[in-house]
Image (cartoon, rainbow, N blue to C red; front, side, top):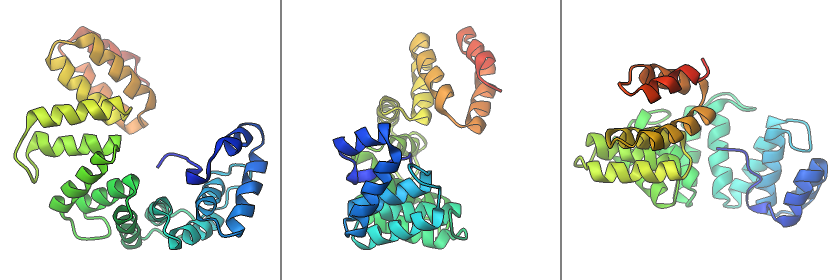
Length: 240
């Protein structure tokens, strides 16, 4: 999940965030201590990211737990992230899967996406690709760009559904429009097949600028073997 102060953000807090992060933290902490679940979620994120306070994963865990027990779906998702990545606690994939499921069932698109991943990969629970397909679909319906890309793969390769190239392409297009770097690459591949090389290059440059190093390296390798000189040129300019 990208950094966010969650539902407790409002115009005043956004202004304070830009001008005085410590005041943001103090404001949120006061509201969290008063029992506001949205502020508990948000102050947990400030501790996790060190916004206006020292980074403190244990405090982040404490406040995510409070918010989750008040029914905040994103807090449930973040507890899954904490356990999956070992932020302030030992890595525990089983607990991560439990919290992702809770988040998904409470309507969080990020919870749906992360739960789909653990189902697909069998991480912390038995693999179940059919249920992963279901939850990627739910997340995509909720507007989750990354989920759209992974759902597109199910339709492209016929995993748990009949192959549907048209549906796969549409999901890749929608994922790219949301700014997901995987979706941008997959939609760029479709555009390349259609001869729309310039449009594909625009998307690939965007993906290269935001994707993690391991992904960029694999992309460079693929582009360097393209029959299109414009794409080979992109491989040469991508960071090594």
